[in-house]
Image (cartoon, rainbow, N blue to C red; front, side, top):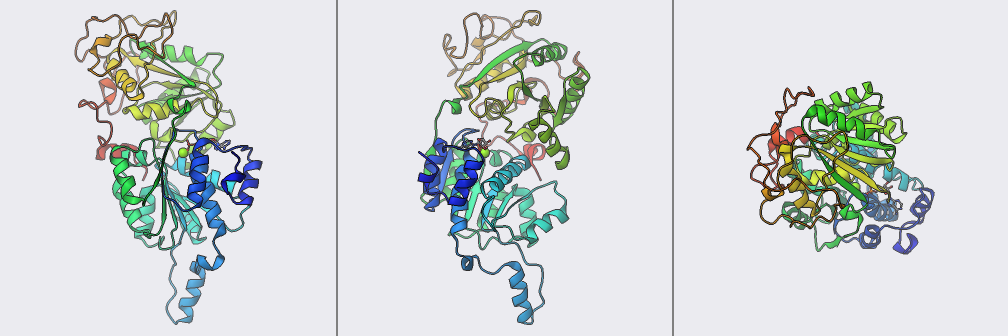
Length: 485
Ligand code: ADP
Ligand code: MG
């Protein structure tokens, strides 16, 4: 299958050739023709499968085909008309024709960058990002150009809608990118409000890691007779990413092991995930002192600083990025060979997103979790979610002193012994059953020998005690810590 055969606008085709895209990915093959025909889409396919182009190529094709007359008056023309009618001209709202909602600023910027790349030969189609953290005058300046395409995080967009700076009456295409993530982050009310402000005649495309549960309900509510595309591929299962768990006795052990692993010759660039912003800073500082070129990336940093850090990563000036979940979302740097979970993620889905930062663009990757013995249950939850066992590995000279929690602690429905698909002979998955494990016998996060004080969650990595329900389990608290307003 070629891009030509999909019916994409010829100027866009040329841009794709220039960008080095030779053939469409599976999700693009399915999504593009249907979207050009105006169908609503519900799409689930994993990170790195080319979803941005899957919605942007057909949208650009449709926008480019609009006769100029159908565009209606620009805000400027309307101001003139108001003057002619003897009315007092006032600020005219931007009237975008396409809106892409994304969970994070990084993702929004990435979508905008890709759109610019695809639309480079299309005169008069502009895309802008409207984001939290961007100076207000800058946003007003972007909006006053009346861009055809808006890419935005929900919170900030609502602010502009409510103050009358954006009018969605001319909107033709609505895209929700990483919809599951936006719901996890507590954006559901904002999304509903935004959707309600758009015309019923719009085309809606929703992209999500899953189409079950809450996302599925919303998806069906806001789309009409959608085409459902679910791509299952080896990459979806992250089969090109090797996974490992190393058990550690305490923070000092964890830090020594991390330093050792970061010196691996096969490591090109790495992302180290931490639970808190403060840890991201502290660990980046410590790694710099240890001679690595490391940088922190988290939500407390100004947008400019975050962009600069990501650019340095892309240019290879930063070797180790120490990041929190939200900040790392959407990082697409093909030379990332290793992902480390310095802390396990709170939610099993986040594990999948984290490890997807490596193994991009068809390469192989390695994802290593450094786990306290008390967090064995959390590893099991991740294994249940991904339906893959993660082999436990030890390195000579860095073996944990304590034995790991027994496999038998797993709840029913877990993986049978011997079902160790990911494992290699000689690597064991957790220790022999029957090892004693005291409840709450974990290492205190605060005042641990490594001396990295923790904020927020204490022992156990912060999984929900009620288990099972990752979805919908996030509260307002989650919105405060993960939100992007
Ligand atoms: P997703 O949203 O599914 O995670 P992206 O849209 O971010 O994936 O694309 C992942 C990477 O693949 C990006 O660097 C993008 O430029 C690249 N890409 C997308 N489609 C193609 C293609 N058809 N050929 C080559 N590279 C592509
Ligand atoms: Mg994407």
